[in-house]
Image (tube, one colour):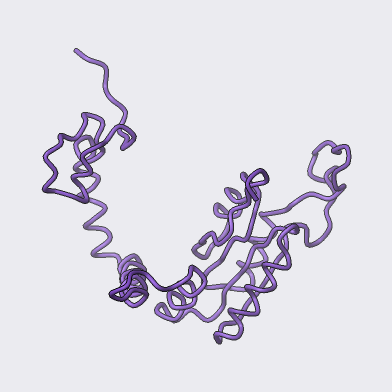
Length: 195
C-alpha cells in the first residue's frame, strides 16, 4: 500500500479545472481528486449562504464591468471602490503600516472622494513600547511595537464593512486578519528587499 499523497496543485501541468479540454493528465495530488466531497460541499454552501453569494456576485460584477474588448481596465483601487459599492458598503477601514502612512492617507482621500467613510488606524497608534509586549529592544530600531490586534479591534468598534491592509508586516497581517470582524483585503504587501 502506497503512502497517501498530499493534495496540492504544485505539480499540475494539466489545469483541467480551468481547461477541461486539456489532454494532459492531472496528478494524483490533485485536490479535485482527493477532496471531491469538499468541493461539492463548498460549492453548495456558496450557493445557499446569502453572504457568500453576495460577495461572489459582487466579485463577478467587478470583473465583468472592469473589462472591455481591450482587456481589463480597472486598477485595484477602482475595483475596491466598485466592490464596496456593489455590496452597499459605507465604511472602509484601513490598517496601515507606519512606514506607508502617506500611501494610506492617499488611499483614504481617494476612497473618501468616492463617497465612502474611511477609518485609518496606523500600526503603532497608541505608542505601546516593545517592552510592554514582552519583546526585546532592537538595536537601531524603534522602541515602539506594531499592534495589529489593536488595529483590528478599533476597526471592529468603528463597525467597518470592509478592511484594507496597507503594508502590514508578515505575521502582523495574519493577526489582523484573525481578529478583524469585517472581511479583509490586501492592497499593498510590503517587501523590504524588492520595495
